[in-house]
Length: 350
Ligand code: FES
Image 1 (cartoon, rainbow, N blue to C red):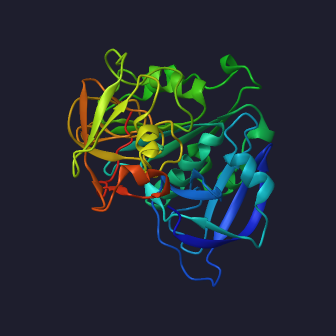
Image 2: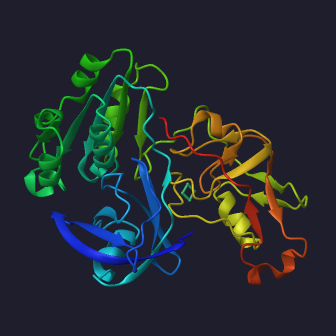
């Protein structure tokens, strides 16, 4: 949940429908440091929480910069920022957290950005450049008016490492992702990519034969297919709260989060699409049908995202702690009756 109150110092038009927001401490104090790939939870309005990647150079402590594409068909977060945020306003955000961190020790790093997916990769390029790591940034956009931050990238990065691909709306005239990844596949190379659904699909397919652990991505919208292996569970199942033994039935068309919420057990959520890990919760028993795009395989052994993930079997025991006075009959009046155990750092490999 948001814990920092920051001042909107500057709003810039970075590209068609893209604003950047520069956030600073109201009294000029340094902000918590961050690494490339980190994001902040932004409270757009009461009850409306969204994640945005920090895109300024990670060494900076005086400001956070986020880039926001206004999505008319979205769920209202980007519209809320574009319409509601003004210079001089105080806003609430969380400290930075990372599900898309650069892995140390790479010999070469390939960054692939599609559209507004440039934001986390821009921070990565700044960090890799500062650390003198061998990298290349391929930035794909429809045209120059859509390429947010292009001027800043040109002026701050080594020009030989920045490749801007403008396809005019025809992907066949843009970057040949499959050819690039085939040519670059060698030991010690790490790939990071982020962009819209078609771009993610093209990158995932081109990277399918790369070694495990060498390809990493961040989704900002749910893929149009289940991400789990195996057959999805057709029916309902039961979740049990480990500390109290309370059992709740999750019907086929309902999410675990919805059912818990109805019983007065609030788990913080944001995307409700398996993309952000805000709802990450431990489980102690049962087989999980993971439907998220954010937890790494190690994490999925102990945690799930209850906004989208489900049980494969009949029972799933959640590692949640309910306050002793919890009374399900008083559910509508209870908030935060339960909390997940402190989460371990998330993965993010695809
Ligand atoms: S709320 Fe984002 S993953 Fe569950």
